[in-house]
Image (spheres, rainbow, N blue to C red):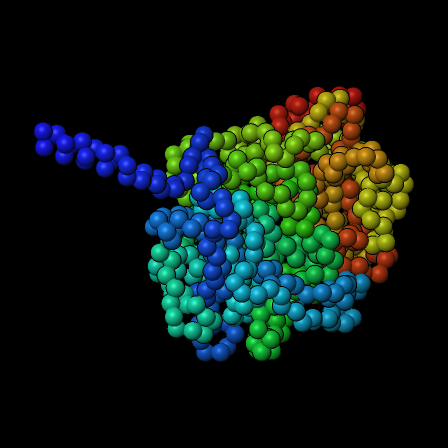
Length: 612
């Protein structure tokens, strides 16, 4: 009886004990991290900042530069010993940028091969922001889904020490140091010059990076170091080469919307770091290294630019890569992502690419990003590596509903060459057969007219335009078109601008960005042999200028015509030399090659009625 009573008392005691609270854990469904209520209470998030010590001293104070870092994590990483992976964004913009207008940019109104008439204004950035918060970006998206979010300011910006270099080695090594610290290989401190250390005991050490524009460049920069722990990156509209951003085939060419910007302008724009370090940084970086390297006289490629091209640094890279870009991004142009995607794929890295039809920015759908980070940061086998490699948003489609393709360019695309026939100052022809009677046609450079006006004009002496027959069916272009222009000029230097357009030009109507502009490109005819060195070309001497236009994936609609537009100075992108240069094009050596899905047979069928 006594034993039975003891047993009943034991059962009663166990039954009346408070239930053990189940520890919060990330939750996954259909291969995606789900919002976990226990992680979703922002009032309980732990937020703190610190300073990670790097391996470089770029502000010349004799101490290794420290990066300002902010952390946001669920409380369970402190109360329950939970370890989570990190979504990390770093930026030079978090602490503010320079204020001003056109005076901050180089004056583009001058002759080619000559210096600008005057230097531009070098502003002082007024730093904003206080400790501990650097940014609130990404937090509401990723913390509730079981991630820690980390932000850092780039070297020489905000409370981060050092100097901006705009593509220099420290911009790769700074995020590397943060990732090293997250994995216990680097030190961090509570104060910028303090000695009290901070440990990242709350993370698994697996890191994914993402961001847009400059913030999208830096994940790639970090990945090129091969740093252990950086498992995946999602760069959105990243600048992957500063030469390709500020130059084009030997030509000084501005990014769209920022006429006259250059590397030193961007340096000034982001230099929000400590005021007492700025004189040293300006003297060493901007006024020496950049001044001697950017070369606005020739626009040639050089070792200076090669050192700021991440394609040249990809050998150590191990991170899984999901690229995102817009085919009509004329700020950071669509070639930037494609060149890195193609190389990463060649290296055997997990790769996907998402292209939409709009302009600058535009992340992949949340589902794509979630699956990418779920697979490579949480290690959940969701088969993302077997998803389609290319996702293209079709014209007029919802950017959240891209079309899946086996690859980009479309594997069914084949190069088709088109040849112009005479018609200046009106419209010439553009067909599959080279005409027997060849001739030369001349136009006069005049930066006063925008490309849209030149494309839409019936007659003008300031451009040449060659137009295909009206399409009898849709034509799908996928890949990188290229052109060969046999040209001569009556001056030693001239801009060369080439657009592919869809006509008739529908300016003033409610159109989408793809209705008229297909793609475009720019070149210096003096670099026809080598992008690193201009050639001396005699006045009137013909040279063959070969170069790629920007990659594209576009369906040209039935009833449109494909137009090859050739002109000189581009009002929105190039320098503005005095109007009057005469440029002559020899049609016998001029052509454009299009990557057409279905190849020549499809294009020939769409050109039904072509008399040539």
